[in-house]
Image 1 (spheres, rainbow, N blue to C red):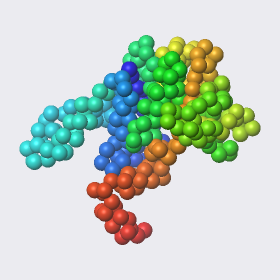
Image 2: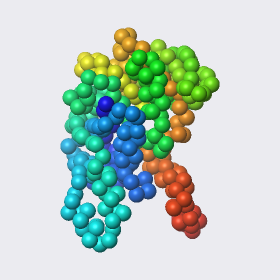
Image 3: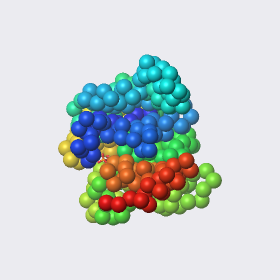
Image 4: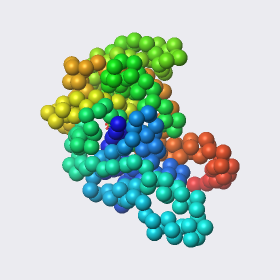
Length: 297
Ligand code: G1P
């Protein structure tokens, strides 16, 4: 089973940094953002390959996931064995590449991985968000299994005045994750999806549950994406193809706490994520607090 990570974007929110460095390689502490997402993608049972949809403008991402024996040998010759091991571990992750050189939207990016995804359900993980405990996709797989292998997405409550930034679902709560008694918009509740709309005006939003950026979809979505026309913002929207999928197949949604995950989509969110992970790592806490305590502007 495959997982797809769309990563062909220009990273304009991080300019000028992203002029010469892909935003996916921005570090959170000492590891690039995309490595956290790849490691999360590999957590559910059965996922054995991660397809990164890159653009040819960002070969640095490919290089990061390639073994460089000479570099590792140089590190070892200097006694840097732990560092060499870390470099080797990243390069050994089961990552392959597809390409989207013409950015036409998220739906188009996913379609670019069609030849890499077999005729199996697959995960999609948006790359500017990662879940440190890696359980969100695992829970989605559990719900899919309970419902005959159907599509499952992660959703979370969003204030009414922000619905137009996201994909919003319509549906009804039909249960909860095993072992949880959540209902409504509580974390762990499971919804049957009856509609999906990308970036609706507040008055048109069918609920306040937005798509968080984690999808487990049946391969039928690729066929629908082939004929999907542009939607919100003139882009080929994954949400629109999912709305068409609903006419043919059942789909469920798991309500998550978005704070389970870390946002790296803007400089402020990325800085907060670095702080959050530094404070969660006993090896980093003292130095981090000291550095912050002495900070002046
Ligand atoms: C994309 C999806 C949207 C989803 C969002 C989550 O939008 O199209 O449905 O809610 O990611 O971050 P984008 O952020 O690319 O505009």
